[in-house]
Image (cartoon, rainbow, N blue to C red; front, side):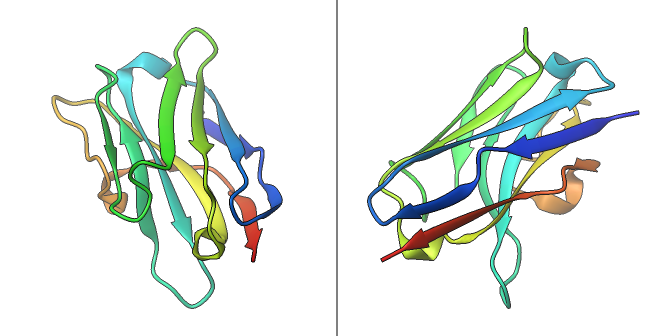
Length: 125
């Protein structure tokens, strides 16, 4: 059974940093495309960052240059380093996994089969 568990969220002032982690279990991590998504109250889910099986990455426009996605397949863990945080980054952050069947869905959320429960990030001004 595939399970994803996020951690590392919290409250931080604008300009600060946080590192999110997503521990995966129940599958071969290096065969899965991985992504981070977020959703703020009253807003639609937004793709934040994605990394494919070759470790090629992609980012949403609002986080480019500030966030970095990475993966450690030896630890079955996905990371999101978030720097220069802004109040508009406040949201619940979710990690997601999609089996690699020849292509990765990048920031297309509905293509991901597995989701974690989320971790809250709050940025104050």
